[in-house]
Image 1 (cartoon, helix red, strand yellow):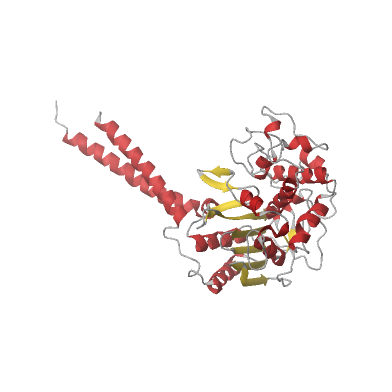
Image 2: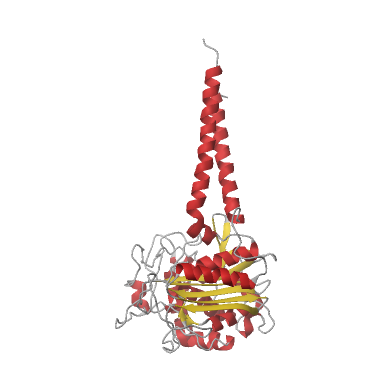
Length: 424
């Protein structure tokens, strides 16, 4: 084989090996400092508070769970004080609760996970596409594998603006965030790939109303919130006396946006209520699995992989799968981000009952950053979301530096060989 070809193939193999090594190092946190010593809850809280002080001009509520019990809390605000009972709008974290509502209907036998969703809809239907709408099943909507390519993201509606109906919002999304598609239709083959879809969860919100003949909020309150003891949680009309102030990233007062797509983007809940919700994900000292709302088998199905990305499991039937735990399962949860600067996360390891809740306004990334560091602190694995959102630029620099070395070495070897070659 030509020597040049051998050098090129060797360089390509070295680049591939280097990319795998860099990826593995990023996932395993090589060179990454732990936010606190293992098991040091107070140390982690101090670290999280330091991030709040450095990054946010709004408010924040943090709860840490250790084996199902509250082990640490922190509440801070640059304005009105917040506490464990303060209501935050939690953005896309809402989807996890909506998934619970859908799964109650599955357990009741009123819907089939693998049936086409449009079989249950009368008020709106998916528009025609080059793919079969009958392949858009409830399972695929829950796991963001339905082929919807809307990329929603809802902006919401300001004070005094009239909210469209669910059908109007699905037919023509009028509060789509800038730069996003916003057209709720099947743009990829259902089941072929994972692609986040807020529109899919708006369809699930409509599904709940169609099947139950109740408003979405009424059903969720009766079937999910009240049995779990989440008595302050609501998708509409939060108690204004308990609702936190809304802040933009610069610390200025922000608009409180309202939503038609409440099941995708606008649950109002408190750290206290979300603590009850996290405890219900696993058997614990005062909250058996599912707490009478869902069975243990259903919870296990929701927590199992349904979708992958870059060869890694990333989504179940509702929750994100952040990283493997030590028991063959995953640390699960959901993040949320609403305009202009709402950021939230709730994560738990069902095997241990260890979890975290971070609710904030005044930062677009703080809750997710703290949640990502908690995940690394708990598991020693860096979440894919943390890598993509916070670490990618540094990872690319490391990869580029190594790639340059590999290419330079290949060039030097090639030139060296030519200098030693005998003349004709």
